Amino acid sequence: MFDLLAHSDLWAAVARGIPVTLALTALAMIFGLALGTVVAVMANSHRPFLKWSGEGFAFVFRAVPLLTLLYFLYYGLPNVSFVRHGPFWDVFFRYSFAIAVLGFSLNNAAYLAEVLRGGIKSVTRGQVEACVAVGMTEGMALRRIVLPIAFRNSVMTIGNELVFTLKATSLASAIAVSDVLSNARAYGKIFSDNISPYIAAAVFYILMVALIDLVFNLIRKRSVM
Picture 1 (cartoon, rainbow, N blue to C red):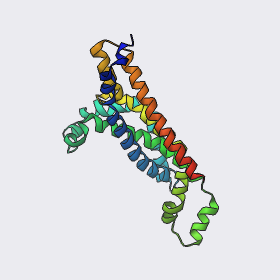
Picture 2: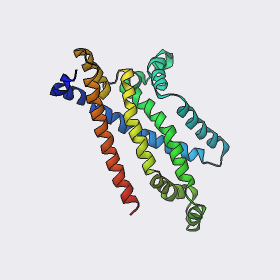
Picture 3: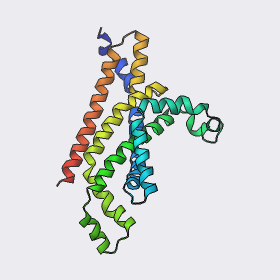
Picture 4: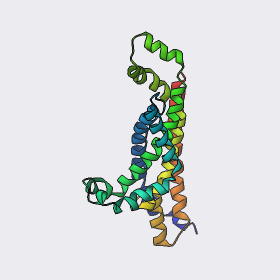
C-alpha cells in the first residue's frame, strides 16, 4: 500500500508543486497585507463612510467561504461579458494562478484588516498625543508610529495567518492550479494510489509550516529584546 513512498519519483513529482504553493502564499500575503492595512485604517476612521466601507469589506470577505470565492472568480466571472471581453481578460482573468492570487488576497485582506485594526487600537492615546505634540500630522503619526506599533503587536497573529494561507492554498487545486496537492492527486490517479501521494504532500506541508513557525518565533524573540 505504501510502496510508492520509497520511490523518489513520487517525492519529486509532488515537490514540483512547492514553488507554486510558496509563490501563491507569498503573493496572497503581500497583497492581502497591503489591502488589509488600508481596510484597517478605513475601519478605524472617524469618517462614517470610510468606517462603514472598511467594516463592510472585512465582514463580507470573512463571511464568504474561500472555496466559494475561488469558484465565483474562476467559473462565474468569465460569464460576465465586460470581464470576458474586457482588457484584463488576456492578461489576468484567463489564468487560474492569477485568479487564485486574487481570491486569497481578498480573503487575507479581510482577516488581516481585523488583526491590524486590533493592533491600531492597542496604540495608546498618550502615544498619539505625543506625536501631535512634536508637530506630526495625523497621516505622519499613522505612518511613523501607529502602524509600526500595530504591526509589531500583531506579528504572531500575522504569522498564524501566513500558516493558514499556506495550508489554504491547497484549495487552489480546485481551479486547476498545479500546486503541491494538485500534483499529489495527479500522481495518485496515474498509479491508482490514494494514500502515498497525500502522505508525501502532508510531509511537505508540515516542513513548510515548521519553517514559517521557526522564522516567526525568531522575529518574536527579536521584537521583545
